[in-house]
Image (cartoon, rainbow, N blue to C red; front, top):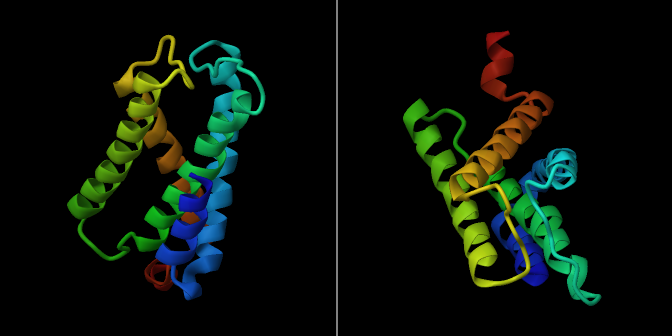
Length: 150
């Protein structure tokens, strides 16, 4: 997953948009970090303790490497001047794909456990993370169309 994440970042983000991709990566990483702390504290999510190095490797890889890379690819390739429905469908597809990937890992391996969160709560959680990260990135990178309106 580390190799796929690094290769995906290099291959799927054009050189001219790397700065935007790095900011989107760091923004999603920060938001997921802030939201994971209460989720782990109150038992909504858990990563079972195993023999090192397997104990923390998957949670760190998924939450802090792989999902932020996927969000940065999403953020760089989104269309700014398209219709609202196409933006919604694009967002829906990305969040659904990440949720499906996460649910498959949780169901077919013993590496993650969702005690009280079902797949639809995880979909809402990942959608919330992506939406908040997108708002923060949009605030930082003021789009040209928005600047001309002001």
